[in-house]
Image (tube, rainbow, N blue to C red; front, side, top):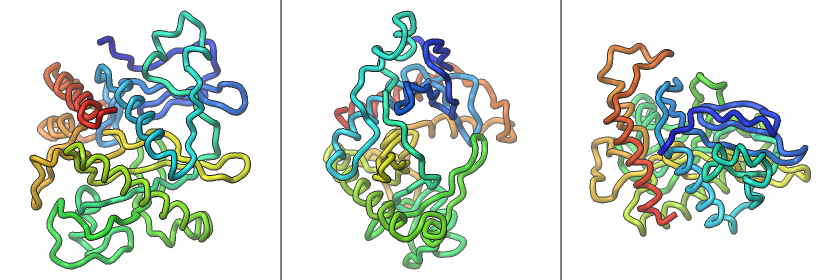
Length: 292
């Protein structure tokens, strides 16, 4: 499969590029989001793309948006991306793009955690809390929590680390009503997704959601949803408390990079072909296992 590192559409105005996605204006009220095959690790965008990754992210996002639409409105328009670009550009958008509503983004990442792992585990070891939430003593790495928790983060610029924040921070930034709506919606989405994934033999350890408001102030789910880039998926058969289980994402790349003489600033080491191939297979496996 031919990899796409960066889209170069001429038929629509480019609004910006994120770590993975390129965004174009479709009129005044819609966006075309193109999911490239770029991959970032340790907040550095790598030079080597992962073939098929953008298509996986788009397929899973569309799948989850439809499955969870009863819980909260979302940004999907169901407009065929091929109809908003020139025919000569179809290959750049096919299977990796969505035409979505243009919303006012809420500048808080809404993270749901069902397990103590990652940055949450590091914070728990130091303080016994995650994002201001007191947790029972004696929890082990990757242990399941009695109830999932809402652990928001302040969104950072590209190349910077998001910063974990407390619920009180969200209240101060957005007001109590919207903060509570974000928390309750995030946890409802996580529970529904985790229950479905469990039926397919997959644990969703944690995930992050992005939300925006339409012109009437109605909350919408937006951006990528429950993909290997935004979530930690574990295979139930290899899960064990006390260690960080392998996940269906770029963990294989991270692990390889950790063995290199690299200070985690750009440019990153070039990836060997076997690492690229293995990572592409892990992304594709997530689609197959979830039935998307």
